[in-house]
Image 1: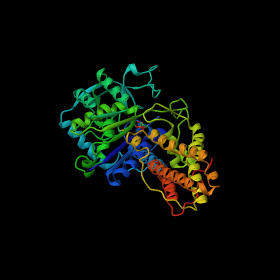
Image 2 (image 1 turned 180 degrees about the vertical axis):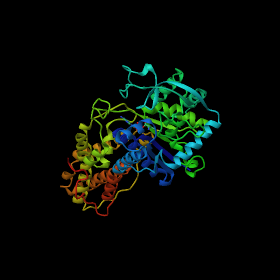
Image 3 (image 1 turned 60 degrees about the horizontal axis):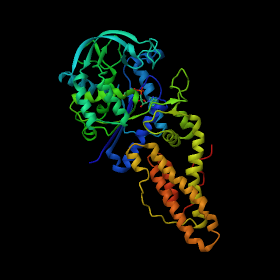
Image 4 (image 1 turned 90 degrees about the vertical axis):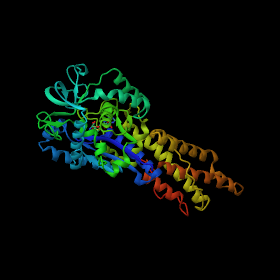
Length: 476
Ligand code: ME8
């Protein structure tokens, strides 16, 4: 039976959700809705959640003067609230502090140890808490981590390591054969380049309890806690109740794991290595760009963090999602320009789609007394693009039809045709063509704007078509 498993990264709860997290979650939501319509609700599983262990989270909790668990409860809820506000329809929201997750992680760690892929070693080096990773001198700018503008900590401790080096040739072969799929192609080549340059040392799977007190215990070593990445990456299978769960048997491997390129290395190297050690099949990874706001990195200090809740307040959930997805292509490095949103809203939604619905239904009401028969044929508008995860291009295809129809009306001037009884057939077939297009536009919009899609379908398939009593998209 066909199935489709979609994941987003699990987001860190050191801070509340922003538009970057929203983008990944929206594309996952649109794709899930698309596949539910193709293969049935019961054959699609969309997972999101929060990553709640590690030094970074413990520090954030301490800064607020509350216990880590209470802190993660609070921030995790903010992610849930934001997604509910954006009308994101996930199947499961996993938290790495869930009891079930912690239990399975403990089993996974034991299995990895039994398989002989872990070893103990002393580590001496620099650690950036912001990145939750060890960092080399060469990566520093003016002695600081360039991403977090902070001096890394000097760390000397005993850790457990994963023998990534043993897996690299197999990972390379899996990427080259397409067994481990990485899209777009440029990101795949980036990963292959990393492997070739041998810039990937073994990775640590644990830290001393003294440095990371907030985490899952390493079952065989009292002094150690699991280091965030094994805990975090495994969420994609613990959520499905690995190894025996029905969901796991049905849904793994993932058909689309979404992320930005900030965490590509972890997903394209560490994650496949863990999966190979567990004898599990490889997923498909889809990497989108890491975007900036008005040319700058999003940061609290700059005060340019865009809160998805504020967008929803201004535009509503569906329009916000449209504005975000239509601004740039998936995979492209981009700059979000919120100041363009009102212009785009007026052009595409008020004057484009809203106006077309209004004109067509108004004319059917006026010239045909609301009577029109449309043959309800699904032309699969935008479907090919969505199958290839080209979200913006799917929208562009829909909007080409909207633009074509609006100019067709301008050219054919149905109000002139209506003046002469001799043109009655011509007028009727024109309105038929337009309403068939509207019907297909509404079908194609379903994964993007389920409510607006239904509104349009209800209007256009009504026994007596009348123009909407209120504009579909009110002018700002
Ligand atoms: O990395 N542009 O969590 P995180 C686009 N917990 N996407 C962005 C973005 C931006 N400016 N900022 C964030 C972690 N994202 C780990 C992941 S997974 C097993 C563990 C999105 O809260 C994008 O999807 O830092 C990115 O990969 C993710 O949020 C990072 O979220």
